[in-house]
Structures are given as structure tokens and as C-alpha cells.
Amino acid sequence: MSAADIAAAAERFAGVIPPSPLQRNDRLSQRHGFDVWLKREDLNAVRSYKGRGAYNLVSGLPEAQRERGVVCASAGNHGQGVAFACASLGVSARVYLPRTTPRQKRDRVATLGGKYVQIVVEGETYDESAAAAAAHAEATGTTLVPAFDEPRVIAGQGTVVKEIIEQLGTAPDAVVVPVGGGGLLAGTLAWLRENHPGVTVIGAEPEGAASMALALAEGRPARLAHVDPFVDGAAVRQVGNHTFAIAAERRPRLVAVPEGRICVEMLDFYQSDGIISEPAGALASAALGLDLGLPEGATVACILSGGNNDVSRYAEIVERALVYEGRKHYFLVEFPQEPGALRRFLDGVLGPDDDITLFEYVKRNNRETGPALVGIELGAPENLEPMLKRMDAAPHRVERVPPDSPLFTFLV
Image 1 (cartoon, helix red, strand yellow):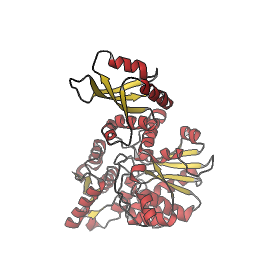
Image 2 (tube, rainbow, N blue to C red):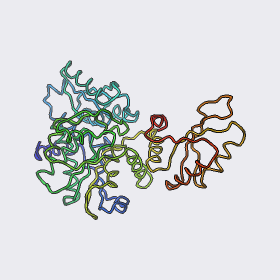
Image 3 (tube, rainbow, N blue to C red):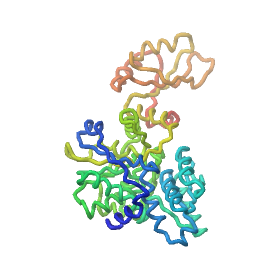
Image 4 (cartoon, helix red, strand yellow):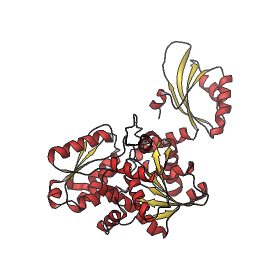
């Protein structure tokens, strides 16, 4: 993988995939003390960078392979990239999607691919879908288009950082790259290695799917025992051999970003910047608040990798953000089963800016008391300790449900 491969990829889809905008973000710059620029991959036709690698691979196939068609597995965005590339080039494609793929992404694959794409929903995770796609390719002779672990795909993704430097007019001090399987990270490292080796590359992984950090620690691609699927565009159990090899050579800085922090950033994007970002798209900018080891005032380019977010997910996003910020808490409260019990709890425990957001009796019976699940949203995180003291003084028996409790998974 060389810078020449990336330059060739850019030439291959020039006029088909126009450069995405590079925009300075005042909110992020002021909040974090950097000069922050967003590479808006959410604004291209595929609404992510994935069309770059897919088009680079499919367009370079010999005619015989094009006639047999291609197959891929995807959590959503890669499938859209393949669908876009195949519709543009007149090549048939079979796209395997895991059952966890949001409806919005499934619909976009179908819209972009039209008559050239057949969608197959199979497997609970990306890895299971990838195994099904590989088996289909082996059985039929169709060409497999990997989501990240293929040199032509990596070269296509590397065109993102090439555009950043051309648009900025100079190399930034740092580039923050969202990391799933590592294709975008590897392409970024490959381009900068030859052209701007002084640029710091920071890979932002979801805390619940930090597969590149595991690979670098183990010295080889290794499988995560558990993957949180929330950041669906970057929830990969094991990075690729090609992407690992490039990362192992260059050793980027890696940071694990909590899923709740990603949700906070998604909401800030929406409410402050008017940007609709998917969870993986907010990974890079969400990492800015962590310890990145960068000097104040550094010029930092963050790749906003995708905007394919299903609107139905915003309720969960708000919930996760509130929990992460320390404003949403759950309790099991044993109430006397008599009139006015809830009112006395509200008057004695809640502060003036706090609110009950959930109240459900866990079990109704003929006893004198009954347990209820109570969700409380605080006006500010610092209201928690005073409220807990008031709970201790109240006559009710109260048990807090901590975020690491198995019960919490049924709430968020």
C-alpha cells in the first residue's frame, strides 16, 4: 500500500465522487482549545466515506469478474458504498446485512443500488454476515468486496486525508480518525507516512469495540470477547490483517471513547451545528475531550465519517447521553401501598429542578408495601449527592440501579 495507490484511486473516481467539504467548527474549537476542522463525509451521496473504497475496487475489476457480480457484508455504510459503486458501474451485487442494521441503512442500500442490488439480512453481528458473504463468494465465484481489509479498499479510503490536506492548504497538526476494522485509519496512515510523516494520527475507537487497541496489544489481529453493537458503523470484533500491518508499523495513538460520550456529541451536532451524525460519525469529535496529548491551539482535522442515523434511535441516544452526563438515574423504591405515598416521596426527595421520567410498579400484591422502578432526571449532575442524602433520610426503602447492573441493560 503506497501513496501512489491512493492517488490513483482519487483519479479513478474523480467526477463520480466529488470531494466532501472541510469546515471549521467554532463550537468544538472553543470548547477544546484547538483549531478544529470537520471533514464532512456525511455530505456525499453515500453519506459516508465507504463509497470511495468500494468504487476503487469494483471499477478496477476485469470485465469477466464484473459480469459475475460482487458480494459484500456490511453494518450498513459499506453496503451503501458497494450499492452506489455497482449502480454507477452497472455491476450486480449481493449485500449481506446483520439483523441489527438500522432500517434507515437497509432502505438506503436498496435506494442506492436499485435493480443492481439484492439485500440479504443474515446474522446477528457483522462478523456473522461477513462469514455468510464469504461463503457465497466461494460457492458462486463472485468477487468479495471486503469492508476494510483489502488494499484497494484501503487506498480508496486514504483519499479522505489527501483531500483534507489539499483543502486546508497545509498539513494539520493532527488527524482524528474513527476506527472500526481499520480501513480508514490504514489509508490515512499510508498517505501521511510518505507525504506528511509529522502529522499525529489519533484513532478513536468505541469503548465497547476497541479491536485495534487489542490487536496492537496482542501483536496480531485478535477477537474481542464482547462487542457493544451501539456504534454499528465501528462495532467490529477483529481488525483485518492488512489494516493491522499498517497500524502496527506506524503506531497511531488510540483512544477509547465511551458510547455515552458519543451520544452527547451526536446531540451537540444536532442541536448546535444542525448536523445529523450516526454514532460512528461522532467518534472522532467526541474524542477531542479526552487526553490526546496535543498542544493548545493545535490544528486538528476530525473525520465525520457518516450521517446514516435512523431517527428512531434518538430516544436511546438521549437516554445514553443523560446517563453518561450523570443526569439520569434509576432506583428501586419500596412504597407504602396507600394514597399519597408517591406525593410524599416527590416532596421529600426531589429537588426543584429534578423530574420523574419513569414510574412502574415492579410487582403488585396485597402486601403493605410494593416495589416500583423509578427513573429520575436531574436538573444538574451535582444534584445527585444531595438527593441521595434525602433518600437516606426518607422512610422509603431505596436501592439504586447502577449503570453496570445487568438490570440496567433493560432500561437503556
